[in-house]
Length: 407
Image (cartoon, rainbow, N blue to C red; front, side, top):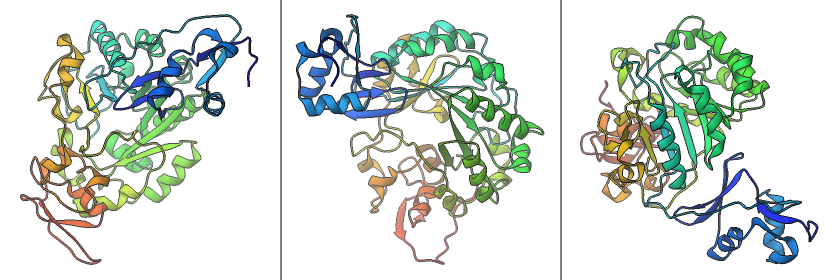
């Protein structure tokens, strides 16, 4: 135990969060600890103004908090203020913030398409930051376009650490020079890596693979956590064994693999789209990370929303053209208009529903209707949709083939 004369404080990477249950969140490690009411109230008193001797507390709980670096000590008193207020439920934990429509690439599978090269105003950016923090948010996913191209990016970069949420930068990696990487204040950079050289360049442009790999190496050298995201297409479907080896060799500790929904430029390149039953097996690739589990009973996206470059708020980036409001009205008011999908509202009663959460709702709507199942996730779970419009499903045996509606 620390010296009894030291002052106890919740460490700087950690903040108290009131979600569905009381929690403490470490933005540096992305770890979320659920707490009982008594433990939560005790941590509120660990504000840097009381010594170890004055605080007391359960020795076992204190030992855990010190071991997990939730609590630390300082030589002189310095108050940390905690004023967590319970957010609307389900809680808003993740926010996609689209800084800009500007991009230096024209990827053939980009779901945003070729929209205007507009920029979210700085005042709106920081309004979102303030509101999301007040709503107990966990991860701010700063994206674009290519977010580095926002005129105020470096000012945003300097401010990202002022908040209790984790700053995650989503980038194509091609602009990540050593100098750029060394200046980043984000906790994590997620880089899009869509295959080995030939496949990646076929999707993202000649020469982009080399620049992306160099960018990943520069970010890693700067000591920033790097994750990778890969979309499964016909262009890269034969790359995944080699790609897994590459991802591991680059020191990437989290690899997200998903199947793109039919939207944006992908609709103009239908030859890239794999049928769900062919795409689903590739979801077994990828590792690490994941979402912080919320309460049972909700479908995919229950804790996520997106803000577009004009300040529009939608339930995710795929729905930016159907917003529920604008951040000028307040993020909380907009979030309360995003109706969460409940599992009992889906036209699906298979045994895997609680695990798959109904899959991507935009992708499901493209194949089976608003309340139907996501056939990609169905096939991943060994369940095959019988009636794509009605959403009925059945477990299938190896070799059982079904014709799914193609795009």
